[in-house]
Image 1 (cartoon, rainbow, N blue to C red):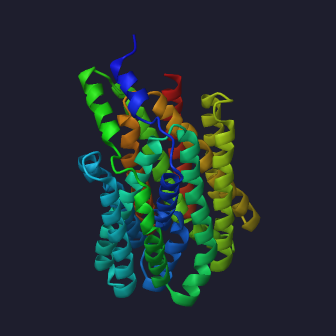
Image 2 (cartoon, rainbow, N blue to C red):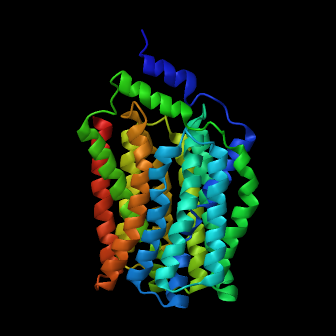
Image 3 (tube, helix red, strand yellow):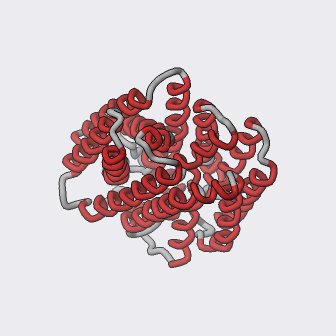
Length: 394
């Protein structure tokens, strides 16, 4: 006899095919809303050059922006499944657009800039919650999440390639204007979201409670959260200051942007390879291989390689980042029967990406070298690997 919660899950949750409009909505909004993270190296360099921000202030900027983006998950727990998702998306898109245009128009001091970016990121984070929840309702989640990742990586690669020239001609305002315009162009796509989005998952959660379902042992959940958090702290800190490492390797600003854009293309290759390999090779082996490449790339960056060595290391870093991520999430999902653990990882990922630049910036301002930063990130990735390998073995 089937568990009633399992029957409910198969009949009401994650078992419908997407309309083309839904798929388009989540891919487009998921590419636009986190764009500042995806082009963080270029933005970090411009914040320092144009506004004169220190490394700690740059880290604080991304900490606030990404922290607010992540914290949009918390109010979503209250409205998701209770309020028309299209209405929420329309309000969030309006906040996102208005916040970016206000930032471009006012360009206030550091405190005012952080305040504006907090409000803007809450709007963008809300749209991302809708995107992730929509993807979870697809009958083919692997394909939808694959497109979700590829869309972000393509946007990031284009941004890193174009932004150095745009910044040189128009300054930092151009980025915020572009984000606002992109948000306006995408606004009609809010109609692609299911108005009743989240109601099935809320019913599923209630059924889990009624039938005593559990996300697994507390130790396993702790390992998953610790592994994912460590992974994103390391990734966020390294990627934010990758342009600084490119400068030390001998690249000028424009050339560095081109190299990092190519690295983002390698990220697309990594995600595509993971999608093709997934299910055909043991996940334990893929986790081990992905983390090995990642740690090796960070160790190479820590040696201050020349131009060619930097290119090879940063390409391997970006490839391994997106290659191992699907296997990390799959390992977590395998131990999660109700969906609560995987849902919580959205917040954990945002927290890690917000904390990474802040910690890295403070360490650099305190006198730490980039070599020490990269070596520390490699050790953190090893710790993350051990956590996820233990989860997979359990």
